[in-house]
Length: 204
Image (cartoon, rainbow, N blue to C red; front, side, top):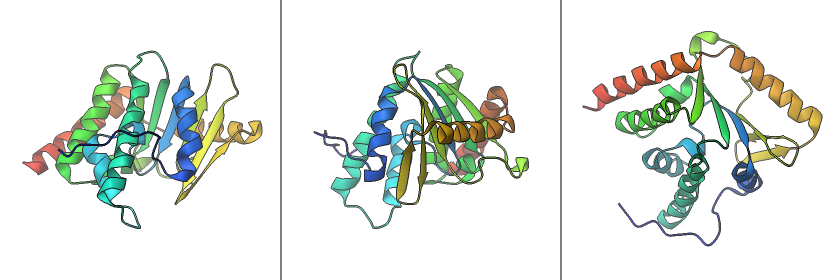
């Protein structure tokens, strides 16, 4: 494995910088992901594939800088109690093959391990759900001990932190409605284990 340089500052996409600072301070995070595993849950192999797929192409040095920051985001999970993390995945997150079956197997088992350890809650919206409230795209909701909640909504090469109470409330309602259509934590972990096993067999 190549040496990954330490950073003097955080290397992230410009539009995500503000959201990253909030993520580090949040006491509760609830996130809906429709296509990719959220950054703070990604394994190194998965992250490398995601960073390598972007356009315009990134240099090795730039990719390594971004990788260091993304992997460091997982440190918010080191404390068992805070933040409380609820993840809501569209089934495409499980089925979109990023980096091949071996990478996907490792990634899904990483999430399952966090779920089994009760560090995160996992819910999957299966394809069979059909239309649901969060179809328009991913959203991250964050609560804090000493400030009002916020919502972060991201699109292609753009992202925005919302602090207006009415907008944040609407984002919360969208997330709540979508989660109501999702599988339970237990059933979601079972589905992820099954898909990971399929990837393991495919990789052999």
